Length: 189
Image (tube, rainbow, N blue to C red; front, side):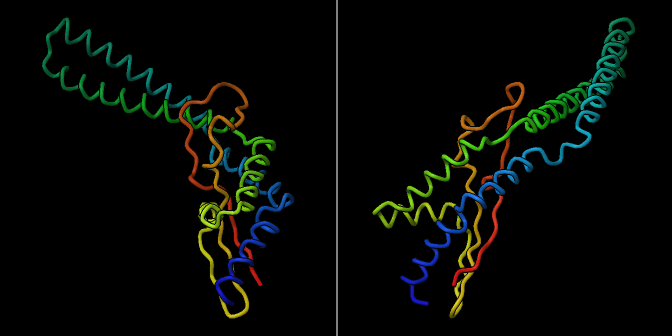
């Protein structure tokens, strides 16, 4: 295959197969499912961490009382260790709560369709440089053989700003998403 033919086939396959509405509906389901994966037992972990934190705070109070009444030097070392444990538990609790909020995050169909339409529109622009920039945003690799090729791609979720995502429930804390969402590959002929 010549370079121009490969470029034409890549463009055709991206528009007809990768950015196909039926395929993208499945992709949207997968993206929303991934946002909520790994959340099993999160409520239990939060409750356990809260219990451990309450126990540590009580121990700190008891050590402070001991240090004030007895003036014990040994209590100071133990108090420092308990303060470090409290800080570690508070950090863990904030992380767990952020993950709990993350499972409330979904990408709405309207936002997803709009992002895809913007991508498709940019692929129809006159500027070859712009089309190539857009393709590079989600094509990971192109393998070309004598008669066939394979496209490896991801959907650029970073193209969706966090303002465009829909929250189900309260305002989330720290939300982390992968730079790219679901992807796949397709053959080009």
